[in-house]
Amino acid sequence: MNKFKKLLIVPALAVTLFGFSSQSNAATNVHQVHKGDTYWTIANNYGIPVASLMKANNKSSDLLLTGEKLVIPNTAISEADKKLMARLVSAEAKGEPYAGKVAVATVILNRVDSSLFPNTVKEVIYQKVSGHYAFTPVQNGEINHQADTASMKAVEEALAFRGQGRGSLYFYNPKTSTSKWILSRQVTIKIGNHRFAR
Image (cartoon, rainbow, N blue to C red; front, side):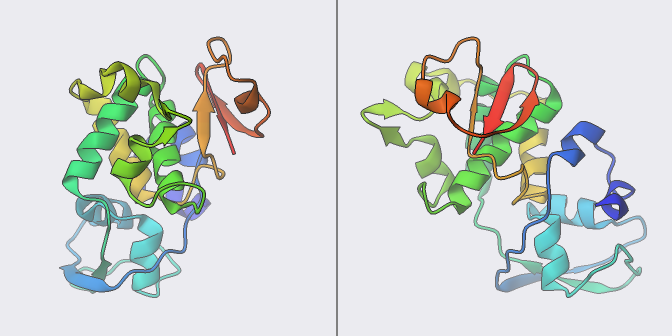
């Protein structure tokens, strides 16, 4: 993990939340490395996880050579999905630290990747459980408001480090939560007013 910290210019707390995934997808594009490129900037540009980019190119070190060609793996997250995620993050993590916004976006991605939840961003966000939406902003309409810049950036960071977040599948505010079930879940990390759990 330390070798990746020097590649990224992001808040240290957000970086420490996450580990790398081992997803692999069929290649659809090639990127020629330019001076100043890093795995982070390339992955962020294509909206893919850094780990997926490295795995698709059989890379285990942070060394990139100018002129080198990298295979860009497919990503199942569309621009519409990113905007929807950002609106949810903005509504759910309003007033929370940036790392908390990244963690909320990561919960969405972790749910997409989990067999316990639907397989798409839209289905995860609009999922109903026992007649209620899984996320309060969907229920009360707050998700329909435009996302702030920090939330959009948090979604991009969560995508770049997809598969991280200590396996968090849930988050809640212990001061306002009325669910006894959520309090029984194992807490993975505390950020701001939120507790993240699996």
